[in-house]
Image 1: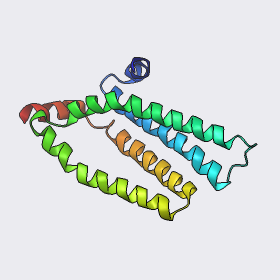
Image 2: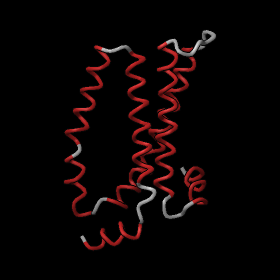
Image 3: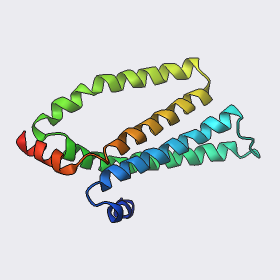
Image 4: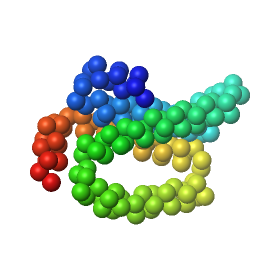
Length: 147
């Protein structure tokens, strides 16, 4: 999404993708906290909980759509081309385990708790992604050329 990317390019041209991804994770975390707060009853609402939850899901879908191009940029920056297929396949098993655990959690936990967990995982992803901002892109580029 060029306007979002250009916003972060004006701050740091070398780390714009990392900053954009961190921002998308933060927005996703905030959007998933809305159903958690509405369903738990922590936030007293005026009866518009359904509309707020639907709006938060739309924001989350927007975040997923915005993240796809950023993911491709980050993948090409950090993962060597020759080993990209192997590395991506290694992460499929843990990803499927997380999906199964999440599906299992919805059967045995309160919905608000599951949304708090999802929001927390997205916040953790934002923190981990922001740690990539401090890495030097010259080192990454040099390592990629060596492989």
